[in-house]
Length: 192
Image (cartoon, rainbow, N blue to C red; front, side, top):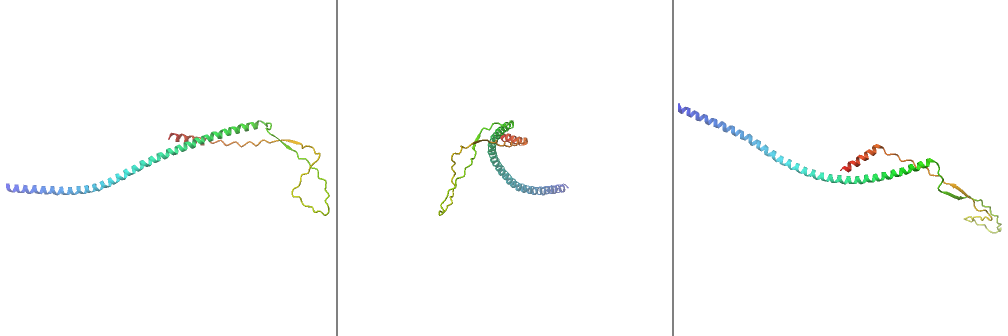
């Protein structure tokens, strides 16, 4: 019986080892499938990382170009705003001068600074008729000759005043919203 038990024990151990070996084979087969899938995913991951790196490089270059373009636009807009402020100051000065002129005109008429002397037309006496020979053919003179007045008085001068020009219409005041928007843009682009 001792030999039977030893044989039975040996067969049991062999069977247990065989089962463990089959289990290990099944587990290794599954592990191999997972490793194959992981290797495929790893190559895809390398491709994704490469494309992501390329996209980051492109984005950095684009940001640098955008930053330089923004700076150029800010400089150009700053120049435009400076010129607009200068023109606004010129327009304000012109409007102030127009308001002063309008106030002076509303105060009352001032003596005319310029008086024009215009001669009054004088009557020309008719010329005495000249008798022409009957056989002469009269030709038409294309340009009439001025009549010479003998003993006529010197021309009389009439003094006429020039009328003042109508005052220009006042320029419309800019709206406060437009001023606020202009101020906002100016401050924004100076901050850049």
